[in-house]
Figure 1: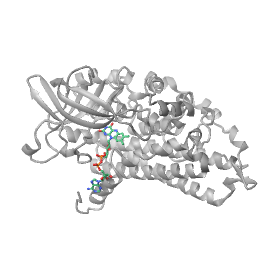
Figure 2: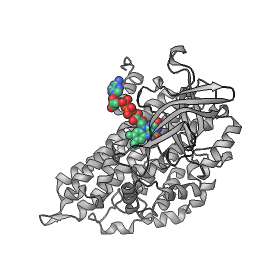
Figure 3: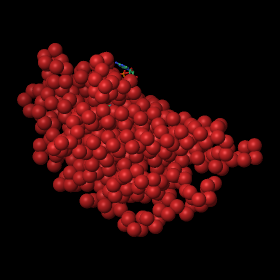
Figure 4: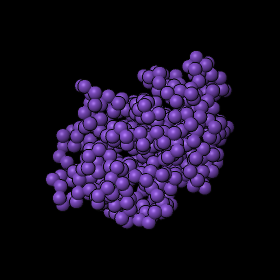
Length: 447
Ligand SMILES: Cc1cc2nc3c(=O)[nH]c(=O)nc-3n(C[C@H](O)[C@H](O)[C@H](O)COP(=O)(O)OP(=O)(O)OC[C@H]3O[C@@H](n4cnc5c(N)ncnc54)[C@H](O)[C@@H]3O)c2cc1C
């Protein structure tokens, strides 16, 4: 497996990870379970991660990713947030060692691991201080490729996936539309077949990384809504080229609140041609296929939210230990301690829910494994809980810093701006509650 090149032998890791630097902390016996340093030699909270039942391969992923991310300090992310420049160097470092293909088949150059390991990877990237922006630099390449790996023909897989894994291509995911929002089944972008070509007409919005992506995994309608027996029919999945110089394709960057290193875009298709070989699986099966990627995405985003929350809490705890007001560290006050302790416990609970969902995702499709609905309930619940826990941690981290929480220099304001994303995307809190009420509690569908 290519990514193993990045690994440090575990024996070495264990001795490296003994947290010498933690001895300076307030508690004389125990190191904090949250990191306030980004250095690999104190790979954050490895012990608590071991105790949380993570597998050896998840822990190896975590150690290796922290090592890569240690080359991208806080100031790198602050600068990229200010300039809006895509973090090409992180993408290059991750693809060089094969990490983009962590959950893609080995015969295509991937590592053949699962969403449980991929979630750990994105969790770790975010926790390193890269936040949601760092994680989103590869996010779609990891989850949106899942339905392609599962439903494409062997020839299509060979054509599409190895270049993404090597980092020669990047892909974005095109589902959301301005006029239909969360009502995905009503989406209007239409792919019309004519011989060996489809032409696409319609609009997508909020498409992340489209400025730097050569490819898009696109959901479009191929049979009009008025002609299908149920709204989930007649949608199709395509792996298309994004040729920005071609007539019929235009895009516009959306100025946004946070995670500015990753572009978000409005995209307009006007009779934009793609070959019929871009269709994945059977025409009309797109929605069923995409669910496979959507549950994976919820797990990954839950991991990203957790990482961001732990990063914020690490900064808050460090500041609370060091900042002296009224003759003592502010962290000696319960008014500072308790909100942070509460945020920590929320993150820990959400962490268990997240990796439970990822484990279910990886065992679905096996004999006796969970159904897609069971995975959906677990993955949606995990994304909800992790997003809420991250929000709590980031907000409290800003407040624990007092005025300095509002200064860019301390980074928590950036985290706070980013922590709203997991609450909104890829599915909102309200829609998760609608889904859980219906599918876990058997209540009537409310939307
Ligand atoms: C930073 C960012 C990156 C993104 N990246 C991508 C991407 O790469 N690709 C992509 O396809 N999309 C992307 N999205 C889009 C994202 O998935 C959508 O914004 C999200 O699904 C919400 O859709 P919407 O904005 O249209 O909200 P709307 O559907 O307009 O909903 C607005 C609000 O109304 C609430 N609401 C609507 N109906 C109900 C109901 N029945 N009951 C209760 N509440 C309801 C919603 O919960 C929400 O709070 C991104 C979004 C953001 C912010």
